[in-house]
Amino acid sequence: MRTGRLAPTPSGHLHLGNALAFGAAWISVRNPSRGHDAGGRLLLRIEDLDRGRAREDIAESQRADLRWLGIEWDEEVTPQSQRSYTLEGLDTYQCGCSRATRLSWGCRCRFLPAGARVNGGGWRFRTPEGDVHIEDRARGGLELPPGDDPILMRANGEAAYPLAVVVDDARDGVTEVVRGADLLDATAVQVRLHEALSLPIPEYLHVPLILGKDGRKLSKSHGSTELRALRAAGWTAEQIWAMLLPLIGASPPFASARIDLLRVHRGPVTLPF
Ligand SMILES: [Zn+2]
Image (cartoon, rainbow, N blue to C red; front, side, top):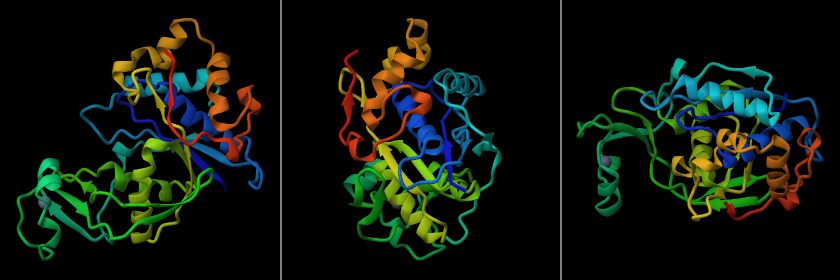
């Protein structure tokens, strides 16, 4: 069955960029574009691996924001903090080098023989060389560099996001991933991980990244773009969808909106406020 997912990270309140990505995920399953069957299911999976920053009260506020927007899910699956992960089947190496060291000096850990003693640190994926081919439903085929070898497991044995998201999408039977274009680079390495683990690769759709009026990625410093702040300022969900839906070639009302893959904006969009 076609299966999409909403996968919020409960370390910050949802903002307009999240609303667009989760709204597009909902529409894609509920009101599929041409060539896709109706009758899919949508899962909610809380991505709370970062135990230091994830908070249940924020997760609850995110669920409330989603419902306020009209985004309902069929089932909430086990949050990532309650799942277990293994490196079995993956070509990894241990590396305790800092990001700065890796960028300026390079890291030799990658080339040490398996099992060699190193300076501790987490376990990285030895990403195969060469560009990664990904298929995006709106952008078509893309060739992307795989980027730096990601940490898959921290030194303390906790799984990191790139491993968890790939394993969980397969475990949860996710067939389509809809998210912001800021994750295109992450998609490249995740496709490599799906391949390494012989797991099916979901369909991808990347929706435009929304920037604050200062031209930067939305973060906690853009509190006025948080949904709860907009709601408190008197915005309605209808007004939010009237602003966001054209970015994916859709028209209000949200409940019957359909994504026009040919009209999904490619570049980032800067908010006027
Ligand atoms: Zn290293």
